[in-house]
Length: 209
Image (cartoon, rainbow, N blue to C red; front, side, top):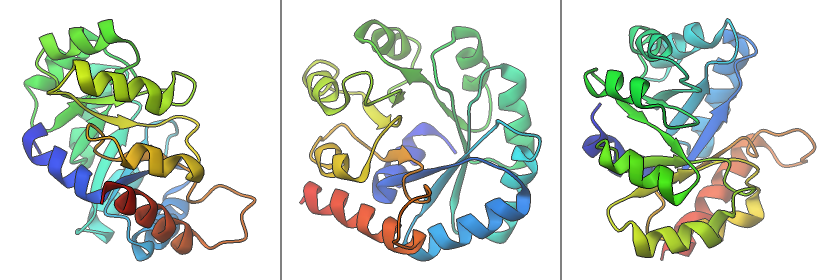
């Protein structure tokens, strides 16, 4: 899936649950609840031995869901994600060698940025859809609002320490596609995962107007 096709799909999805793959069964159970709540896209991070198998299993079990692979640190990670059936990939940073490799590949890579210089470097390399990470520690909506005025062709997928109370602020920004995080299934809430997903979607879509 190319960036020009991916970007509107992520904007429609509004949120991007970031899934830590403890096991394939854990991921399938969690993703089922996320999808029932209205999630249209997920990111499975490549941080365990189960990650690639989880990507493959989700593609088979949930064909209507947009499934991405995150924590792409090397070209080998990108290739493995492609082989597992990921429809897009996400990196926490901008590494020219990995980005150049992905540009020749079949699916989009969304590189991570935090500073204006990194945005400029990424755009010069041909990437306009970017991950803003870690969002809240890096200034969150304040920084992204400034970026909207400077980098008019760039769009961002913020993630990192984002909480439900922040969602409306992100939703009001025109340069945000989808907001990523794990608050939808974090422990300590009495609300169901389905309800948290639905509430998150409502918060962002209401803010967008």
